[in-house]
Amino acid sequence: MMGHFRRYLIAGLLVWVPVGITWFVIKFMIDLMDQTVLLLPESLRPENLLGYRIWGLGVVLTLVILLVTGMIVANLIGRKLVSIGERLLDRIPLVRSIYSGVKQVMETMLAGSGKSFRSVVLVEYPRKDMWTLAFLTGERGVKEMEDKTGRELNHIFVPTTPNPTSGFFLVVPSSDVIVLDMSIDDGLKMIMSAGVVIPKAQKEALLQQRAKRA
Image 1 (cartoon, rainbow, N blue to C red):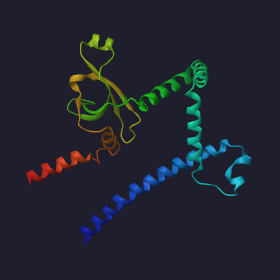
Image 2 (cartoon, rainbow, N blue to C red; image 1 turned 90 degrees about the horizontal axis):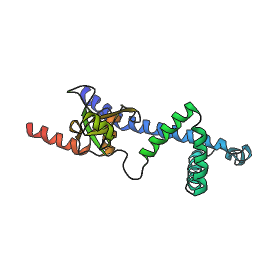
Image 3 (spheres, one colour; image 1 turned 180 degrees about the vertical axis):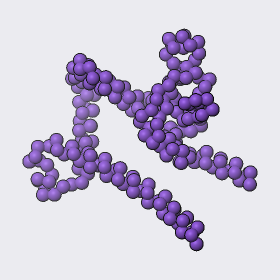
Image 4 (cartoon, one colour; image 1 turned 180 degrees about the horizontal axis):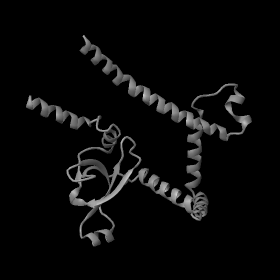
């Protein structure tokens, strides 16, 4: 009896906990974007015009701001203005480091060429006989590094769990990098879940192996 109760309880938690967390995260993001409504003059804000607040209007306003900004900077005049602004920021020591670093990361992550994360790899880290998932970001290292070490090098990014946006950049010999037959999305899911979520293909293969052993 208690075994069935525990099984049903866990099954219910597995359904509602992810749904609840997803809802709270989405609500937090929408509420955060709703703060962009404060950019409008007070007389033009929806709560003053309509007498009530429209939940999610900030999302629309955020998208409009991003699209308009993108259209402006996509032309010659916009690029000139951005270039002038970046030169001004480049003269401020602390701001320069933060801005350039964030911009380079965003350009890499959002690159349409698909050259940000090339593949999911397995490397020995942080010590021998201890393995971790990582992402291949460059198939060849800087030539000077390869000349100094006398080895072909790869650039990899080792993300942290459960936040894959932070991590470590490593330069390792190509021979020490094992490329996995796993998509980038599956790799991110596995890292964010601390290994709880296993890619479907690998999970099916594991179940087949267990069935053969049984």
